[in-house]
Length: 385
Image 1: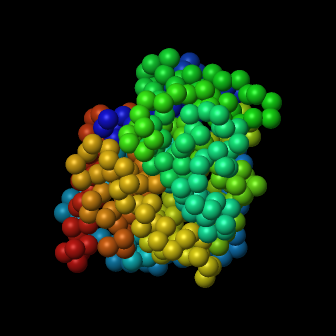
Image 2 (image 1 turned 30 degrees about the vertical axis):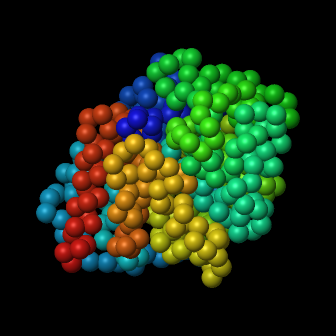
Image 3 (image 1 turned 180 degrees about the vertical axis):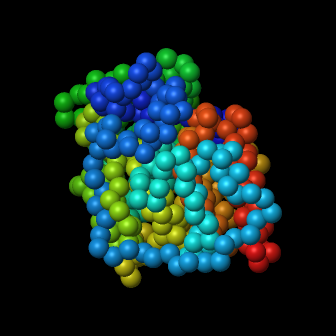
């Protein structure tokens, strides 16, 4: 699969049926975000917390401050690049200094924008926090140790590590165009009293490959990671994210996380936050997972999480713990319609972007254009510009 395909999991299919109705009740015709008009997306992406059932992620009193840096000098028009990407916001931070920041599409620095799959990388970071806190003992623990509802299912032999790397070997169809695919059928599940809706569906799946031998992108498994963290810590993801990162690292504003039918955060999607706070997550990674003078994730966590753990059959690229990795040491969190956090520790570089691409994927070359932009920024830094 190309990255453009595997980033496309429908918001409408990730949410429970009741939340789908709430989320799209005021929008005409299609209830599927992929078929909203451009104007509907421009407006909806910056107001998702008003359209869905969400939980607040409170910020604290102190703010991690980015210093003002010299404007980065690129050999092309960055504003024209933003227009070609339909970026609502683009922020370049290098050595903790803002070197470029611009907004468009009626969006500004005080606004929030939905993340889509970028949330996956937040979720995996909470696994690291739960390990540092002692709630999760080992990545080699069986998933069923933390999610008892999966016992006596295909997940009996799957480890936490294999969930993080999407190498469980469990059969899953992510084809959003197929109404019989798992990602489509998952959304049609009715809640079972006392059981998370993700667990209700995933425990029925079967195996297609030996555990740990095959990488397949599975939205449902990212949702399971969220259930696992909530179960292990005894708290919800929003509160735990606030406690471990949002407050101690100094995010500047509250964020929101969309909830599913059974009250759990949709851990593979849909955090709404300010652009600078997305960049702060990248800076948090560069800082080694330290916040407020304390270690939030185990020493060496990000060295594992952001390097290739699974082969995705693309030269120079791989998959870590819910991060897309590059062989040059850079990595990214990415979501449909142009959401992204690109991190290059060697250059102390973070590029955060909120977007509304004309299509969810990079079929028109916008994704490839973004990769060229990342490389151009890297080259400018190397040249001292």
